[in-house]
Length: 492
Image (cartoon, rainbow, N blue to C red; front, top):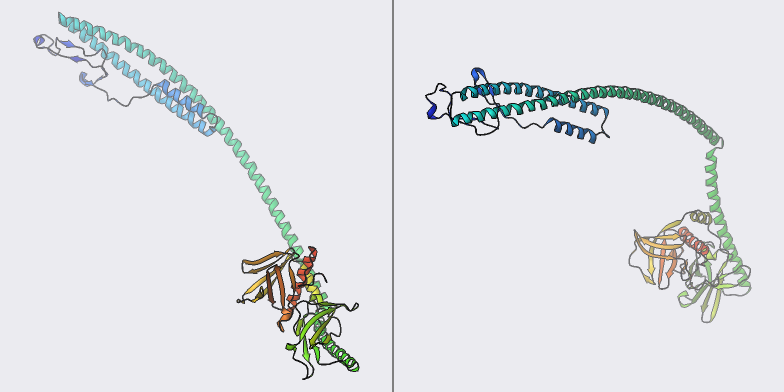
């Protein structure tokens, strides 16, 4: 800020103008910014923060508008125009204030110049030259102030022009915003109408579906009632009676077959008596799959079977060709699926004397076993609960329950989630019934998974044991593998 310092020396204290010193010193070439108050008191205005110029404000606003031109909405654009209009109004007020300030400065400069002119007439010498220089400086400041006023007038005109443009743009933006708002309202109304039509269509469809469901339910109830009526007409109680009667007939048939077997044995004994054959032993048991045949002595003079050599054979009913059953060297033999349709023959040798015992007829299949196996074949894999009796010819210490999986491509033995053995069908695999192990032989089978690994497994029932053998042989046959017992592959 330009400051003017007036120093009054002692030499001019006796002059007429006692309030003005003859020694005037101007510290700067600028004119101070202050105002005259009441009684010609000098008031210095408070300096506020520096405000940017009009060109900077316009440039900043233009840059912001250009930056958001592509993405700005109509509402935002209207707000921008309103903000620019308010800014232009503020700038116009500021220019008006500056004009008033410039008028005050002109009055102040004029008073100062008159004061200096009156002072120049009262001083002489060097002080007069300083006063002349001060007058020149005041005149220069007056010229600069006049130029500044011209610039302010030009800026004022530009501000008015910009304010008019922004006002028009704001009005246009408001008009566009109103049009867009009206268009949006129309679109909303159309959307509401479409939603209402869809809801009505959905309600109509729901009513139709409910009515169709109700109609289908009524038709289904009628069909159920008709089925119940037909079922009552067929008297299902009689069907149950027929099932019980069929079971009783099966029991009677088994009893009759047992009597027939006994009669056949008596006939064979009579034939042997006629032929003077020895009748020291006989076969005891049903001649059907799943039963055990036992050699029993008929007389007290019969030798002890523990001192005799026993061997079981299969005999073809037509060819009378016997096949040795490997491992069947005990007095008890449990028939297996390979024995169905064939005679079983036991040869007892004692002191070079041979005694032959033969079944009266071929071994009959087990009732219902074929249909049970056919039902299991439809499954990809069948599981049986078993207990390991022996492993590699040695008694197994644990009697935990294992699962025997018979699949289309492999056989697997598991305990819980752990797989103990898993082998695909191969020529080294063997599977057959256990040959001689007491009365439990009918529920056990021998399985050689591979060379050096064999098991004797006990099943929960005779039916499951025979079903497992038949199922595994069926799957192995589909893989071109003949699954049999030890030493039976060539004969089979």
